[in-house]
Length: 455
Image (cartoon, one colour):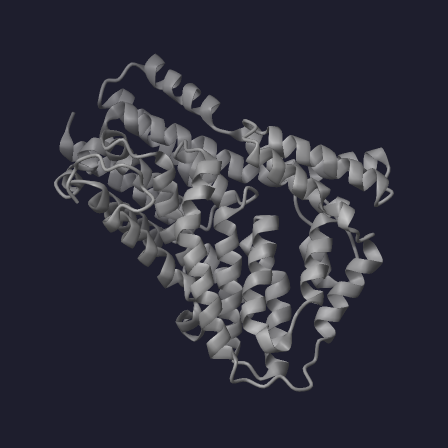
C-alpha cells in the first residue's frame, strides 16, 4: 500500500467534507456519502481490494448503525411534547425564577430544558431569547446572560439520551450510552457547580427592580392554554429514568417511555388514538398563537431523524472502509510516535478532534476522524470507548458555539445577534470541562486501574 496514496486520499476526503459543509452548505451526510464512494473506489481500483469484500464491509457497517435507536428517539421526542411532559417542565421552570439568583437559574433551567429535549438549539431559540429579553429589563449585561444560556444548553446536550450529537457520537464509537453518561458526570458535575458559583458572584451586583416578566408570563400562559399541565405528564420521564437505571438493553427504555407518553396523551390530554399515533412519525405540531411556544413544541417524529440516521450510516461505512484499507494507520503514523499512554492518548483525542471540528466547523467530522485515527490506541491500552466519547464531548460539543463559522456558532450569532467575543468570557463550561478532563487523565482518577503505560 502506498503511503503517499493513503495520505493523498485522506486529504481528498477532508477537502470533500470541508467543501461540502462550509462552501456548498450541504447536509453533513452528503459529503460523507461521497467520501464513502471515493474511498471504496480507491480501495478497489488502486489497492486492488476485492469488490465483494468492500461491499461486505459496507453492508456490515450499515447493519451496525443504530438507525432503529435514532428513529425511536424521534418518536419519543414527539410523544413527550404531546403528552405535556416538555411543556410542564418548561412552565414549571419559568414559574420559579427568582430575580436575585437570575443567572444561576438561567443556567439550571437551560440545562434541564436541553437535557429533557436533547436540543441545545431549541433551548437557545426559545428560553434563551426570553432570558435575553429579561436581562435587558434587569440591567444585566446580555453577554453574561447568553453565557449562562449557552452553558446550560450545550451542557445538557452532552448527557441527554435525546441528543442527536451525543447519540451519534456514542454510536460511531460503539460505546455504551449509560457508561458514557456516568463518566461525563466526573467532569460535568464540578464544571456545573463552579459555573453556578461564578454566575452567582458576577450577577449579584446587578439590581433587578421593576423587572418585566411579560415575555416569560406569555410563554407560561400559552402553555397552560394549550396543554393540561399536570405532574402526571412526568410519568414518561420516570419510566425512562427507571428503565435506564434498571439497565434495560437497547431501545427498550425509549419504547417504554414512548408508550407511557402515548397513554398520558390519551388520558390526560384527551387526544384520540390517531392524534397520538401520527406525531410519532411526522412530529408534533401546534399553532398556539405564541411563536416561542410553537418553537418549543413543534418538533420530534421519526422523519426528523432521517438526516442524522443517514449521517451515522455513512459515518459507519466510511469508517469501515478506512479500517479495511488501513488508510488510517498511515495517517496516524505520526500520532503513534506521540501516544505513549493514557494522558497522551486523551491529549491526542482533544487535539485531533478540536483541529478537525474547528477546521471544518462540524463537530461530527471531528468525531469521525479522531475515532478512526485513535480507536486502535484505545483498544491497545484497553481503554473503554466511552472514555473517547467523554473526551470528545468535553472538547467538541461544548466548544461549538465558539466556532462562529460552524453551524452552532452561526446559529447563535443569527439567533441573538451578539458577537462571540461578548459572551466568550462568561462561557465558563467551555474552559472548565477540558480542564477537568485533562486533570483526570493526568491523575488517573475515574479511569480505573492503570494499565502500565507511561503518560
